[in-house]
Length: 519
Image 1 (tube, rainbow, N blue to C red):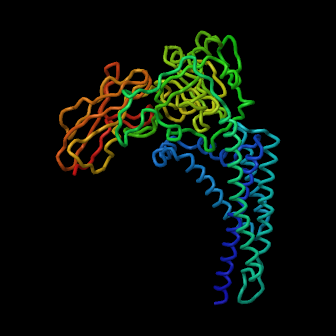
Image 2 (image 1 turned 60 degrees about the horizontal axis):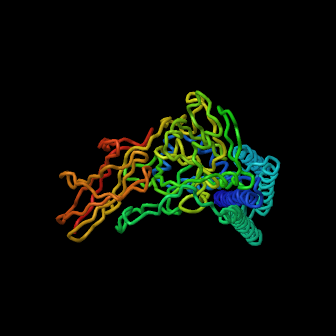
Image 3 (image 1 turned 90 degrees about the vertical axis):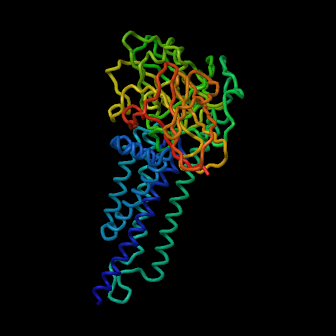
């Protein structure tokens, strides 16, 4: 009986030690976030570790994350990184109860991992980063020892064996809760400081007027249908898919864009240099290759920037340089045929989106916008370098991970109204959506009800050859369950195939099909 009681009490002590480990692991992460907020030279540890996890994760795992979490996949991975760290902290706390050196060794290992993964981060400054991460881990390890010292790990015989006395228990609980609160507050404060610092700079920028502006969308460019995606997607609603756990926020004063590789005249541009060049605007629809049929990982916006062709002309592209590589500040890369930038489409080094400087999540201070190509091969955000090389000499980030090296956007259409599974009422039913085939335009959209005849949809006037259009049909339906399909034909005369294919390796295909009920 006494033995069982002691065992239960010992288990309770180990559990308390685990809680101390959770609190101090959180403290280590929180302090590194605070350091990142106080110094531009220290990257976020959560970001660095999360980015490394993305790099080593198999392609199907990434696809699963995007499919399940959509545009929230980065937040989910960030939360997952924190949770894994806290779980490890629980076991470190238990192990360190009787072997204190285990706790110190674990936090030392945490520091080594954090420093190692921080090497590839854009804000990395070696000395500052090493000091910040090592100090954070050291403080957390010291605090863990102090918390564990409040637990009576070697009890004398008695009814309270194996647990702290009332005073010790209160001190332990208060200390652990205090450490947890400090962890949360330091992490929140650090992240807030980073965001505020970059937003103050971005919002102070006044973009120049474009030398070649676009006309504002007229009434013929959009339909007034409740639930229909707007012809221009607001920046806050525009999809975001990338590999950054924490959004890179380069210092605009020290940021530069380099042109390197197989060029006659390598050069470098500051942000001020870019803004001083003749800028053009273009309406361009961007799409993620991970967009499922009927998915929302696609959007249309007005982009302001310097024509990529003009910059390549200045660099002097050498013979044989048939691949353009865009490199981000976090070393993410894309690659596409050089001829794409020179064939007349308005490929841009963009600095503005929908009339304002690029939002941080969409690439501030500059990014690539290449009409007609999926983002994974073209849309480098937080751009830092454009390198000219050969097609065989380099494979960009996603290619070794199983995705096609070339990624032209497939002709696609989507039903927005009514929603799948929705119940609608009224004699005249409006069915509406969007369709896109950037650089090829949309020539026609057809809608079919319950395997009936295809109906021609009315289209809005296109904003550009690279922009999507809205479409709409009005029909009368009897009460009941209805199946609706849509397909689009692009300007080359090619109609979407009915055959469903997955997003890998070069984009999904098939007709978007929904069911809804008519009352």
